[in-house]
Amino acid sequence: MPQTTPDMSEPADPQDHWYFRHEARTWAAAAQSRSARPFHRALPGYQPTPLVSLPGIAAECGVAAVLAKDESARMALPAFKILGASWAVFRAVNRYLGRDDTDVDLAGLRAAIPVDQELTLVTASDGNHGRAVARMAALLGIRARVHLPDGVTPEAVTAIRAEGAAVVEGPGIYDEMVRRAAASTVGVSTELLVQDTSWPGYEEVPGWIVQGYHTLFQEIDSQVADLGIGGVDLVAVPTGVGSLLQAAADHYRGASALRPRLLSVEPTSAACVAASLLADRPVTVDTARPTVMAGLNCGSVSALGWPSIRGGIDAAVGVSDAQAIDALRDLNDGAGLTVGPCGASALAGVRAALSRQDRRDQLGLTADAVVVLVSTEGFDANPHLTNGPDL
Ligand SMILES: Cc1ncc(COP(=O)(O)O)c(C=O)c1O
Image (cartoon, rainbow, N blue to C red; front, side, top):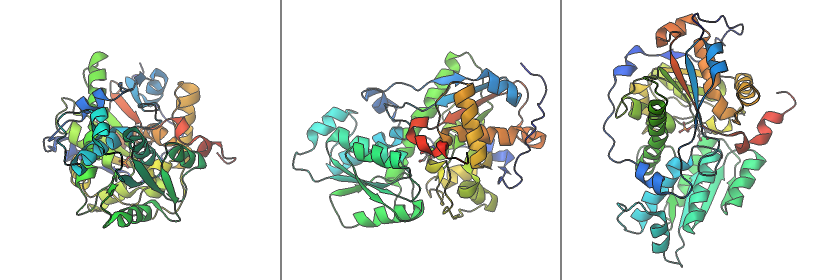
């Protein structure tokens, strides 16, 4: 186990939107009204995703342990997003049918949907959330329509269609697709918007999605305890609109016994959370430039997530495509994982943070630190993104 801080030859990018706030660790989240975990446990194919120890990466980073929460195969999908989509769809469809949802039984819900039901789930997505919503519609025997921005890979489009969903492709950036998807459902009583970001007046469904994401962090805590590890010092979270980050803040500043520092990681070209934290108010950034981290290419922070992010997130950093690809290669070729660029961004962000002594000091990370990377996406989600000639 290395005892000293390594001298990493690649200096961090000075334009990487570094943010740090010391007081975040003592912020207290509101208690969660309900847990989605019993629902997830009852889903066919559910099991906790692995928490994988990466000793080589830990040695390189000068910490005791780096653990990757590997979301490359979550209920047979290559990303974590089904955790949120499943719970939100379950609650929203029950609500639509006027059913009580205390009995967390998906088959029971499917059986309760009338055969002549015209119900359609509608969403906008960079790929993974759309596929998860489409999968839920298929499981319930109802329809789905997914609005996709420019930059979503052909493989991701095909995968969403293969779930049986109708696809509306751009043109436009993610924020514009969110507006279009929402507008398309106004006044249509048979269409349910299942969006994983929130704005004033649209909070309930995104809140359920965030509730669903808590399962991921609850699993991490159980797995850390099973490994006999006493504490976690840093959790790195790939961030788009910040709903997953909100779940991290609410969990680790709420029910969890662990009190790690929390690091948000975004593409430098779509760093709306870092920009908002630095400005101390929600800021929209232009996301017209494509990134290999397609699932993180979002320009605005979720309104529902902002108070928790502002209160409970310690640090934020932006990473370049090249940094994400380096991390992807090291995780896949070196450590035997099969992560995609969004998943790998967590390691790229940790490297950008830990390669500088001033940032290590801010985060209070010493040689005995334990770091968790939330590796949100498998390689299969967007295989061709990383095959370009210039990468
Ligand atoms: C693979 C992946 N990782 C991370 C995220 C970020 O989640 P959020 O948009 O809630 O910040 C997304 C969002 O779609 C994603 O697809």
